[in-house]
Image (tube, rainbow, N blue to C red):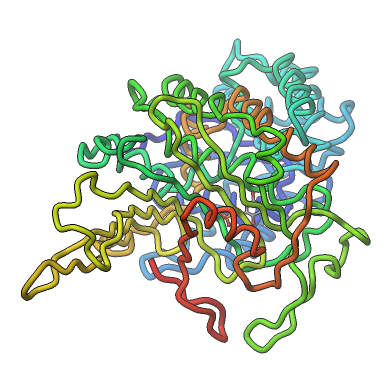
Length: 508
Ligand code: BG6
C-alpha cells in the first residue's frame, strides 16, 4: 500500500502555539510537505488564546522549524518559506463557546477564497479540560455536520482518568460526533516499529506459525525512560506511570503483539482483533494485585558523576506524593492462543536508558536430542521499538569441534541498514492517516474503555493498600520487580550493557 495524498481540506490545530504542536505536529507536517503528501492546496489554521497575526504566527513557525527540524542536504532554501505560507491564525478564547462563531466564519471565508470543499480536520492539541468542551462548541456552530464535507476530530490522551471518566468523555464526544469522525491518538500506534510487529507476524509464516502458547513461554514488554519527570510534574504527579504509559501505550502494544490475524488491515478488522485481546485481559485477583504488581518511585542518586534528585524533590511534586514512577505487572490473556502465557509489562522513568521493546521468550525444545547441553538457551525474539529500531533473534549453534556444545548467537536486523530510509515520526503517519479518513492506527473508544477496565482495580488497590517501593534513579527499578520474574524462574532482559558517563550504552 503506497501513501495516498489526502483530498483538500482545512486542518485546524487548537493549541497551535503549544509544546506538542511545535515539537511534533509542525515538524511532522513539514516532513509530509517535503514528500508531497499534503493536500493541494494545503491550508492550516492555528487556533489559540495567544494573540498572533498571521504573519507573527508564520514567524513563530519558521523559528520552531529551525529549532526542531535540521536542514537536510537535499532541502531547497525556499521550502520552509513556502510551507509556512500555508499557515494562518485565529486568536480565539477557546474556553468560551460564544467565540466559536468567529471560527465558523473564518473557515467559510477560507473555503470561499481558496475554493475549497467544506472538509475540516480539527486537531485538539489542548489540555484535557478544554478538549472536553471544544467538540460541543464546534457542534453548536454546525462544525460537526458532514452534509457539505467531512469533519474529523483528533483528540490526544489522556482519555479520562479512569473508566468512568473515559466513558463520560466518550459519551460527550458521541453526542456530537459520529464514531467515524473521532480519531483518538495514541502515538505509540503510529510508531513504525509497532506497525512492524504486525508485518513481522502476518507477512512471515515463519513467525506467525510459532506465535502462541505452544511455543511462547513468556512475553516481556518494556518502556524504559532515562529522563525523570522533568518540568511535567504538574501533569504527572497524581497521574503516575500506569496511567501515563501502561493504560494506553503499552496495552496497545500488547494488543498488537497478541492479536489474531485481522481479516484485512483496516480499522474495523484491526480494532475488532485488538479489542478481543484487551477485553480478554484477565482481571487480577486481590492476591495477584499484591503479588504480581510492583509500583516504585525513584530516589536521589548519582548518575554519570551528577546528583539526580529524588522524584519527591522534583519541582511541582506534592509533599509525600505516592505517585508511581515505575510499575511492573504480570498479566494473562483469556484467549486460547495465550493459554497460561504470562505477559510481563514494565514502564519507568529514570531507568538506565531509553528503550522500548517487546521480547518473546520461546520454550525449550520438547525433546533434548543433545541432552542437557551447557550454554544452550531457549530462542528469543526481540522487537526493538526504539531507539536503534530493529529485530533480534537468538538461537543456538553448534560450537565447532568435537562433541555437541551449543553457543547462543544473534541474528540482527537494524532499520538503519535500510538504505536511504528515515523512520518517520509517529505523528507524521497518524496525521496523514486521519487526513485520509483511516482510523486503523487510532485507538477505538471501546479499546480505551477495555484498558481502563483492566487497570482501574489495580490503581484502586494501590491507592488503598498497595506498597510503593523505592529505587535509586538510574537503576532498573525496585528489587521487588526482579523477584516478580525470579519467582517464575525468569529474569527481565536488560537491553543495555552498562551505564557510561554520558548515559547508557544501549545494545540490541
Ligand atoms: C507520553 C507520556 O505519552 O509518552 C510521556 O506522557 C512519555 O510521559 C512519552 O515520556 C514517551 O513517548 P516516546 O515516543 O518518547 O516513547
